[in-house]
Length: 133
Image (spheres, rainbow, N blue to C red):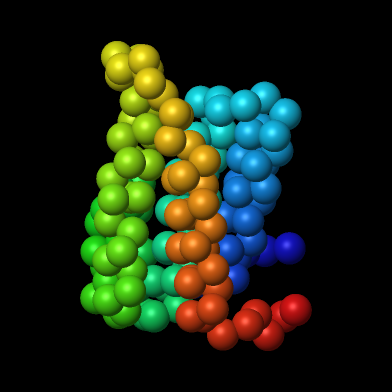
């Protein structure tokens, strides 16, 4: 299978895989650094898929705040997720490079995962179904 940066459903496919593995890690290992990174990456890819579906030109960024801001330009309901974006960004960078404060790392993971699930549901409901499925 060949994927395309221009196909939102390819973004969703890659996002769903990350989300599935993040959930497996949470269930079997608890909150892990990798699980947090996978959750952030899943949200990033779902947002990019949504934006691509709206005609947005791909920007190679990991900044969920930028992506939420762009999505809010298409639908104001995305602005509800600004804090989620900030929190996931912070956790992502705290564990991505040594030097971050990991003292309370992931204590809010379950809340963030629930909010991420709401955001994903909003995105999936906003984009027409994949004609290939």
